[in-house]
Amino acid sequence: MDEGYDGYRMMLRDLFPEHDTKRVFVVNGSPGSGKTTFVKSKIKQGDIALDFDKLTAALALDDALYGDRKPQLDVALAAREAIFEQIQYRRGDWQNAYVITASNDPKKVERLCSRLDAELITMNATAEECKERIRNDSRRDGFTDKYLALVDEWYK
Image (tube, rainbow, N blue to C red; front, side):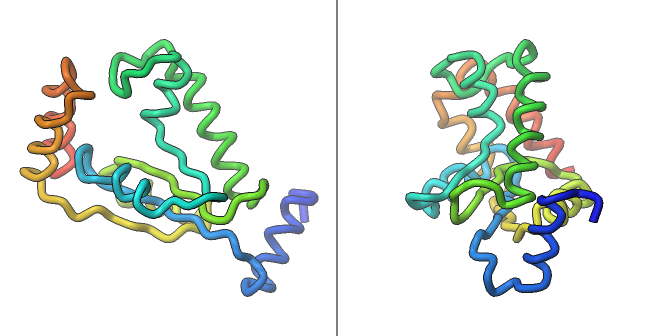
């Protein structure tokens, strides 16, 4: 057991899954597919959620959810990795964790689910539904074209 206490905890989780009450959900889908709305409808007191867009906006101390986040990107990626580790080893006093992602790479999503021992929830909105939501989302003003292109890329 080369991971010390964390490895021991993971071994116990594997041996006694009925005692592991923490659940992890990876919520994946195209931009505009309703991932954040879905998580907001499910999250309860004692749960945690990781939304990379909100994390980078928080680092910029910016109320605007979307924007140019290049200056915050490296720090946000490191923070996301640290949060992934907390979730992976079930550290903290939380019940459910929701990880919001927009990857169109099934292998990448599968690796993340495996790493976090997570259940995958895939949003099944059509490309046109996603685009309509993006066009109607005032938070994306100034970046609408960028997100519409990401939808096209996602559905390729």
